[in-house]
Image (cartoon, rainbow over all chains, first blue to last red; front, top):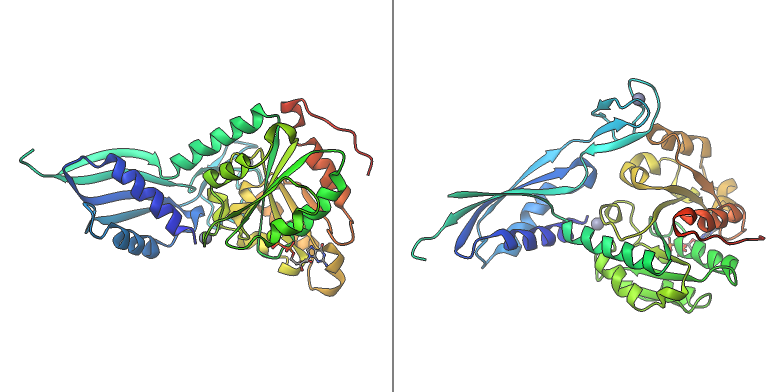
Length: 117
Length: 226
Ligand SMILES: Nc1nc2c(ncn2[C@@H]2O[C@H](COP(=O)(O)OP(=O)(O)O)[C@@H](O)[C@H]2O)c(=O)[nH]1
Ligand SMILES: [Mg+2]
Ligand SMILES: [Zn+2]
Ligand SMILES: [Zn+2]
C-alpha cells in the first residue's frame, strides 16, 4: 500500500543520479518480498510521475527478492517458503534474522547521453 | 547508452532522518516507542490508559499519526499537554521527517518517553524507521487469532507484541494459544503482553516494560507502584 511513498523516494533518488544531459532509459530496482509492494502499481506510478520529464518513457524493471533468513541460534541460512513459518530446519528454533527480502534497492540506471554538450 | 551503477536503499533519506531523530532523542534523554497496529485495535485507548498510569511518574510525549483529523490528539490532550498530531494526508504510514516535525513541537528535554502512535496499518509502517528505540506491534482479540500469521513483517520487526481488548475474550472466537503459536512459528522468544485498556488488566506489565526498556542505555530508571 505504500507504493506511492516508495516510488516518490525512488524518483527523487533517480533524479539525483541522472546526468544533466542524460535521458533515462531504464531503472533497475530490487524489491524485497517482505515489502508487500505491488509491481504493477509501482510501474504505473512510475510511468505517470515521469510524464513530461527527462525520465518519461523509461522502463522500471523490478527484481523481486525472496525472503532469506539466518538462524540466530545455529547460524543456518535458508529461504523459507512461507514467511510466517520461520522455525529453523536445522535446529528447530524460531529466531530468524532477515538477510535478504526486505527493503527496496536502487541497483542501476541506464542512461542515453545526448551529444552536443 | 551508459549504465550508472547505484546500489543504494531507496529509503536512504528516511533512514538518515531517522538516525538524526534517534540522536536528537538520545541527546535529550528521551526513549522512544513506535506503536503499530491495525485501525481500531486500541492504540489510542492504550495510550490514554498509559498516560494516566504514568502521570506524575514519567513525562510522556505523544506523536499521533493519522491520515486526517485530530481526533486522537484531542483524546490524548486530556492526559498530557505534550501531544502533536501529524496528518499524513492519505499516506498509510509515518515517515521520519514527519516525526521530526512532531518532535519539534514538543519540549524534548522535559520528556522521559516519546510514544509514536503510527497510522493504523500493519504493513506499511514497518518499512519506515522513525528513530524509535523499540517497536511495538499491537493486535487485539477482536481481530482474530490469525493476524500475526497474516502479517509476518510486523512480527519480525517488533520488540514486543501487545494483545489488546482481552476483556472481550468471552464474546469473540479468539484462541490465545493459537495466536501465540502463530507468533512462536516466527519468533519463539518474542514477548507478548495481553492487556485491556478498558478493564486495566495486564496494564501494569506494559507500564513496567515501558519503564524498563532501554533504561540501561540512557541510565534512566524510575520506581513505580501500580
Ligand atoms: N472493550 C474494549 N474496547 C476497547 C479497548 N481498547 C480500545 N477499545 C475500543 O476500540 C475502539 C478503537 O479504539 P482506538 O483506541 O480508537 O483504536 P486505534 O484506532 O488503534 O487508536 C474504540 O471504540 C475503543 O473504545 C479495550 O481494551 N477493550
Ligand atoms: Mg488511534
Ligand atoms: Zn500502505
Ligand atoms: Zn537454527
